[in-house]
Length: 88
Image 1 (cartoon, rainbow, N blue to C red):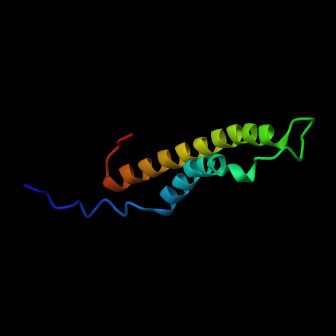
Image 2 (image 1 turned 90 degrees about the horizontal axis):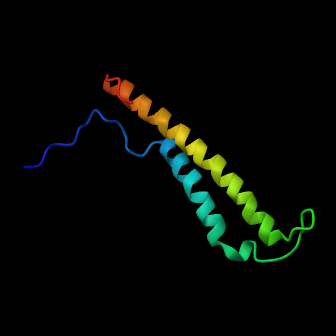
Image 3 (image 1 turned 120 degrees about the vertical axis):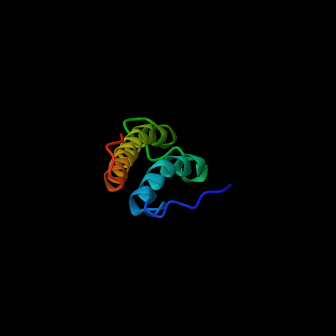
């Protein structure tokens, strides 16, 4: 049949997981909100805003993904330590 939920797991939604979600969601929101960057000015070293804004988000997305990954690793290590195991 069904099993009772494991009450020793701790909360599923933690502040760390919220930060992970925000880090992963921010690039999508920034790129899907086209009205915020659909213009040519200001230019940066002769490159229209439309292009350098998108390229900036490529770099920011990389940084945010690395931050989310490191936070996820820390969260998983903390859960394994709280559970008493040495799982990775």
